[in-house]
Length: 150
Image 1 (tube, rainbow, N blue to C red):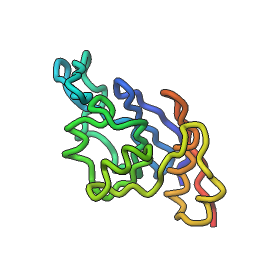
Image 2: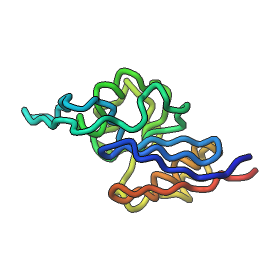
Image 3: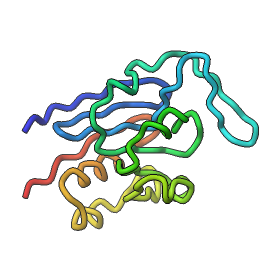
Image 4: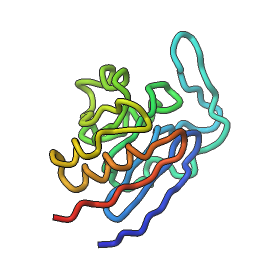
């Protein structure tokens, strides 16, 4: 199996992390330059640049890491195009808001710690890599975890 790691900055807070067969996307924002993202309570944000990677060129996703639920971190393009079976690692608030629309297998308790050992016994190899990557999320930086060998 190929274990090369690559990180691609897509724009805003969106990063594509690929490690072997695992592909993670953080805070998907694929609006075009000049389009508005709705932040809630009447606030909007205008996209200043084009995404480096268009949605159509994304690989099959193993999961999404969503730091919080605003239109500039989970935009209408992602809401329409994301396969509803892709696991989303997110905050308790976002998980409640997305319940019923998307699979949200893990809930981030905080952005610095996730009970990795607790999760490890209950998930498949690919999901373990997703949980490990979410545990390493800190601000805009992310890191991948190793695939568990059985």
